[in-house]
Amino acid sequence: MTRSVPLSQLAKTIRSKNAGVDKITFDIIFPDRESYERVKKSGVLNRAFVARLYGIPESRISDFVEFDPAMAIKFTIYRLKPSGSPGDTDIFGSQQYAPLLDVQIPLDN
Amino acid sequence: MTQPSKSLRFLCPNGHLGFAPLKTGSFYRGLEAHPDFIVADSGSNDIGPIPLGSDTSTSPEEWQYHDLEQMLLAARKLGVPMIIGSAGDTGTNSRVDMFVRMIQEIAHKHRLPRFKVGYFYSEVSKDYLREKMRSGERIMGLDGRPDLSLAELEATDRIVAVAGVHPYIRLLDMGAEVIIGGRSSDSVIFAAPAIRAGFPEGLAYYLGKVLECASFNAEPFMGKESVVGEISLEDVRVTAMHPEQRCTVASVAGHAMYERSNPFYEHVLGGTLDMSHCCYEQWDDRTTRVTGPVFRPSPEWRVKLEGAGKVGERYVGIVGIRDPYTIAHIDQVIGWAREQVRERFGDEGYELHYQLYGKNGVMGELEPSRHTPHELGVVVYGVAPTAEMAREVCMIGSRQMFYARLPEVKGTAGGVAFALDEVLPASPAYRWTLNHTVRIDDPLELFPTALTEAGV
Image (cartoon, rainbow over all chains, first blue to last red; front, top):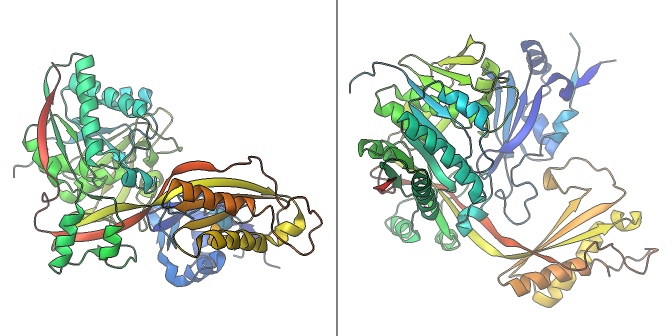
């Protein structure tokens, strides 16, 4: 059986925020090289996975970056309507990260 | 240009001046570092389209005044320039005028010796863009938007262009000791004095990029604390001023990606800051040193435009539901209420939105959870051209949930719970109509500068 841990146990910061008025960007920042490399190597997080997790087509993901200097994985998605339009539920885009917390990262060596 | 003989220090006390007051402890500590400039950005488009569209500030005047007063008294005492970008949240002309007026009031109140105040505007008229479009110029959409259409332009109430370093450099050349800027890229208010002094553009824009949000580039997380950045011909060094904060390699590098879709590139009027070859080193306990940013000039002047347009007047209703059968059939309940609004007002000419707290009220279409809640909180929004109509759209949309006809519901004395038997007026609804760029001939073309005085 594969053991795994939730992403929230490996990352020190998991956040979302507007990147301009038409996009929301997600940052997953790790406290040390080891956790960062483990998640990177697991291959769990990628464009296809994010699209599945949020139920969106991959074309709505504008950027997906592994950012070594900050030990961070970052991706950005297009909003369906600009922030603050009638019907928008999160003007700052600041509460869209929650589904990432429980993403399971396998602990296989 | 002559090479600068010494490094320059910049003190930044706040990342969005006015949104919350700066903390004075670390600001005073920062003043002891003898900054050459005291600089803060005051704008954001995070706050949604309402302030720009309605030409208001989301920040209370007391807090704007507080920070301007702190910064002005310190800057005049040290005899160094003070620079504010994107005045009053949006950088519209009225916000620039308001900040200039506050500077004059503060100077008068404290009997400060006379000094020069430079300012510039950033608003763009619809006529100007209409003329550009008529001459065949494309107003290009950013972030996947189509090019601007005449219809979208007509639906817009107010537009600002986002300035580069140019009006700031011009105003410093004119002798301004305090600058109140219209809408500007955050980084340019720091980059302008550094470029003017002869420092490399890559380091200058990076300095601005790393300082723009003040203590957000340090750890642990604290807002509204001061940071000091120092630029030399070789590097940028950034130091946290709060005794319990440190600028670390991770915190400084991490800030490069904050609120940006990509951590490697930052676009400003005139070019792109390329951070992909940045090298970060811990310089001392509280300071991180950065080398290697490169500025790549663009082949033409393309300026970013932000615009907001009014959608309509808005009312809000709040509805609670506890019956599990009703919760399971919430789509039918909403469908019933929508149908009643349709019978009264037809299919068009208004908007009716339902936000379902407990189901997907926060994430909407992005919500992956299919969990069934034991209760639902529904916020109903009615938007229409007049307040009377918006109120009635919202009222029907809320109250008719009470009368929804579900075939097997047990409770037949009212299908939902009202905490308030009324709908509430909200601020009018706006939307971002412009997130575009337009080509200009001169980087000062849309940013007229002027000089006035303050003090006694």
